[in-house]
Length: 251
Ligand SMILES: Nc1ncnc2c1ncn2[C@@H]1O[C@H](COP(=O)(O)OP(=O)(O)OP(=O)(O)O)[C@@H](O)[C@H]1O
Image (tube, rainbow, N blue to C red; front, side):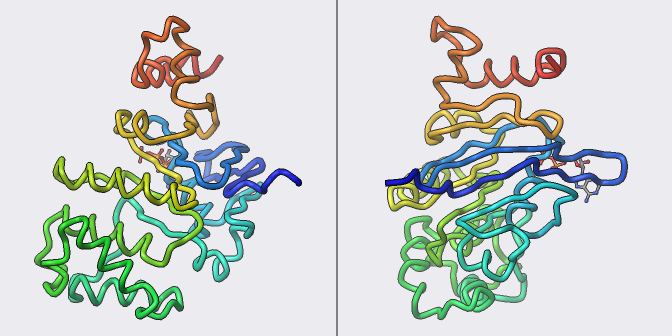
């Protein structure tokens, strides 16, 4: 039996904005069914990487494949992936339920096929009582919950989550972490970008650290912390600070 193909792979993926190199020759490989924590300081290129991998931005150079599809094949990609971006695209004049139906429509997925899953997720996130209210009356947390449900309701192969617990209260944040673990238990691959390192430590199987558009370290959370302190005393925050300290990262 051959090695299974990775859920996400990139080869020398690069994005240039004028004279700024946002992502610089990134090559990575994410196996199926894992949660991959994608870390890096502000401006390191995480969002740009996710935008390229989800077909929203065209790379300047290199290639990216997600669920066996080249990232330039946006139409094929859209059925296989889910995306929760930093600023979720929601229509204020719709109700939460209409927004979820609209998101399914956009992907060409019949609402009847996903409604049970969508409503189940909304119930778990304590959003079900608000689904018939208009989004312009939603709190930040309610918007975030809606955006999470719309990203995963169609049971995608790969989900990209940018700061998924942003604006969530502690109980909702915990539920969301549990839902992410359930996703990977069901075989979904989760690409998770966050600055909340405790979340990564808790749920990520692998971690990649980006600095100035380049991958400066990769491994399990334990491998990353062992690399900076083999006594096992360091936590992921210490590892992150060391790996993204300017001279060390440059080295
Ligand atoms: N549309 C754009 N036009 C010009 N420059 C951009 C654009 N998008 C991103 N950049 C630049 O690319 C670099 C990487 O930005 P990016 O948003 O990918 O970083 P990030 O790691 O997601 O940061 P943060 O943690 O702050 O969200 C930054 O220097 C940023 O200014």
